Structures are given as structure tokens and as C-alpha cells.
Length: 100
Length: 488
Image 1 (tube, rainbow over the protein chains, first blue to last red):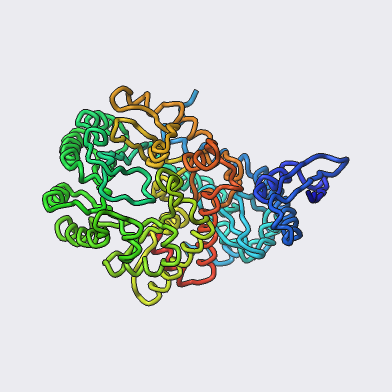
Image 2: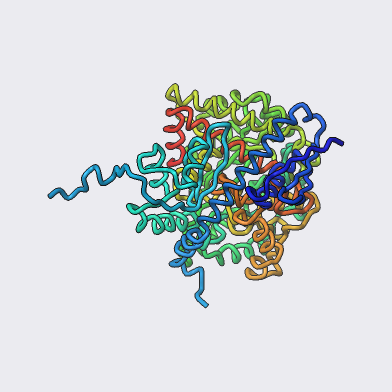
């Protein structure tokens, strides 16, 4: 079984970004994720050997997924307060939410 | 002094501080990325501009700034006071159907049918009325449950089998529901899902008198329709065409609609199918894949084509429909219209497969011929395979509260909620999509959430969303057309 190792600098990326990318690409790769010093190490194995000729582009796709998820988490973290405020505001006059 | 602000007021060139509003994104291809927010507003930008935006490097002079501000992806001093209020209003509008609760009540008045379609999820060829017909008592109890719904608009849909084979019960339910509606002051609508093969003038005149809509099945040209829908005499096509003509004459042209189901034999025939609908005077078609339930599984119809093959079929069909519109022929695809309504308006059309929380119980409920209550039409189809996971009660023995607070229903709604489900919660298509716990339960070994990376539901919907957005971005004619469909 061919195993591919991808390393992400833990000072740059969060473990959650790597986990999210692994989840999204779970139909393509089985993933084993661990921490090694300052690196998040992701050991990937292709689930379908027929995809081997596309391996490089799939690994690049995985890297892009990690970057995208990192950006999504950054947006989510920057906007979490206002998101909760909007939801509370949206349903404040519906009578659905009872004050305690 | 002018009552309007000078132009310079709106075109501040200096970099000013803006705040991000919540959004997520999805790459459409190597260059373009789709942004969406919680109200379903969307915008397509080069990916590099999203990074600039998140890092605070955009200025009011930057190309996408005004659009980002107008669609509530960012807010600055000009909009800070109004943005949250507007965004909250749009979010509230999207969920306005929730407090209404169940609007669609499906009565399976019989399981008997004279057709023997291999893809059918439920019907039975049988003359045994006692075994497969709903009784008067069950119908009355089901109406009690129907009118407990807080929904101001109640739609009663008769399904089968072939519902017209139990026409006396349809008459009884319609009359009783009309009496109750007067007392409860609700809007009431009826639909009969029928193959029209046994519909006679008495039945259709009753439909006309009570404003009942007819929804029938037309799978395409004669050879394809008859292959998909076998019946004694091999004349399903002739009967449905005659039935459509007859029903339009008696019930009214606007009250008769048709649905198709995609079988393996349909895959290379999408243009023929659309042209058949046009030839029969329809201006809309719902391109529907097979569902993984009932006889469609037993006869291996569902497994006969992949999601990717169906997507190819769907896109070919939409291209043909776009071309027809380009030549001046007005024609719509229904599933695309539902999605486009979610994309372009704050109105949720309430289609059960594109709802979050899931449409299970909330959007629709099924009263089966034997008294069993199922959380959706798909749930009763699953039950026909022996899986009673979504049976949530019995009209004869359970109260409204016991049925709608059944832990099976609550748990499925809770687990499949897309704003917290893995992958869905971060997906840019979430505002346009929905939860389908029954599909995932059936396809993912009893898991209502399923693994989205391997989900056919997710692959199908994402494929359509990307295609619709891409086509609109590439072609102004298509964008105008899709806007019309969204507001139809």
C-alpha cells in the first residue's frame, strides 16, 4: 500500500483545518493525522488504486483544501460574535425563543 | 442645498476600516470562488480577492467592494447601522415557514395499482381491497391530525398505488376536510397523484367541483413511457395522454401537471423527453432521479446508473431547455427553479428535499393505507423494504403530540441539521441545500447524517449548484432566464 506523507507547519495551520480537509477528501484518501514537533503530519493512502496516475493533483487538491479550511476558520472566528448576534436578532420577534 | 449626498460621499477612495460579516466560500474552478452568507446572498469572485478581503486589504475603490457591501459580506461606516438589521430580516424570512409546521399531508388511500412499474417504490397489483385500502375510520383520524397542524395553508395529497381505485374515500376526505376548513379558517388545497388510466368523467368532474389539482406521470415519448410504465395492454402512454386531454377539458388546463422519473432507458433521451412535454402543451418539467427505496432497489433500477451519469443527463436537459428559451419558447425545469428561488430571493419554497431542518414531519407527513404514520413519503417507501425506522405512530392509537414528538423524528431532525452537520456546516451551498436523513439512513447503513464525502445526495446537489452558478456567470442570457425562473 502506497502511503503519502504531507506535512503542515503547526505554527501556520490549525489541526482542525487538516482534519476538515481529510474529512472532505475521505472518499479519495484514508488519512492518519498526528503531530510531530512543529508539524502536523498527514499520512494519506489512496482508497482506489485506479486513481494512482492522478496522485499528484489529488495531493495538491488536499493542500488547497487545508488552505481553504484555514481561511474558513479564520472568517468564522472573526465573525462568530456578529453571527450569533444576527441569529438572535433574526428570531427575537418570532415568539419562538422564550426568555428565561 | 441638495437633499442628496454628493457622489464623493459614496466613492471614498481612502482605505477605511470595514468589518467582515459571516460568510463561507467554495471554489468553482481554479480561478472563481463562490461566496455565500447565512441569508443565501451570493457572489462569485477571483479567489485572490477573498484573501485580500479577509486580510482587510480591500479599499472602497476595489472592484468587488460595493457588491460585497450590498450583499452583506462586509460592513463599513455607511452600512454599519443597517447591515445587521437587514441581514437578520433576511435570515428570519428564510425560516418563516418553520413556525407554520406541517403543510403537506399525504393520504395513501390505497396501495392497489393496475400498473407494474419496476421503479415504483410502493404499489401493489391486487384486487384485495381489505388488505390495501385505507378505511373510513383511519381517514377520519388522519384528518383529526391534519387539522391539528398550526399551518395556515394545508395541502392534502392523495397518493397510492393508484388513488382513483379508492375514489369513494377521496370524496369522503375532501368533503370532510372542506367542512373542517370552514371552522378552522385555513387555506386548503388538494392534489391527486394519479396515472389517470382509470380516471372517468365522474371522478374528474368531482375534481373540477372541488378545485383538485391533478399530478400525473409522463416519462417521455411512447416507447420510453411504455417501457418504464408497463400495464396490461402496454397502453400506458395512450391512456395518460387521453387522461391529460380529458382532465384538462374537465378540471382545467392549469390544474393538470406531469412528473417524470429517470430510468436507465431515459438517460440518452433527455431531449426527446423535453420535446414530448412541449408537444403535450406543458411548459415545465421536473427532471427527477430514482430514489433508493422500495421496488426501485428490489428490481435494481436505482443501481442502474450513477449520480455522475444522472448529472450528465440533467445538464444536457438544462442546456436543451436554455436553447429552447433562446429561440423564444418558454420552458422551465422545476428543480432548478426551486434552487434559484433559494438563491435569488429570501423565500424558501418549502420543497422537502431542500429544507433545513429536514422536511421530515415538519414539511410533510404521510398517513399510510394501514393507519401507520410516516415522517415523509420516502419513509413509507423505506418501510416497504421492511425498515420501519421512520414510522412515527399510528392514526388509530397515537395522539398528535405522541406522533410529532416521537424520538425517532426529533433525533433525525436534530442529527441531520445542516448548520451543525460535518461538511454541511462549512459548505457554501448550505443556504441552497437541505437535509435528507432518510436518504442517508438508506444509503449509509442507518446513519441519518451519512458521510458527505461519499453521499450521492451531496454529489448530486453540489453538481447542480455549481453548474447553475457557472452557467449564470458565463452567459448573461442564462442569468436573466434563471432570474425569471426564480421569481416565477
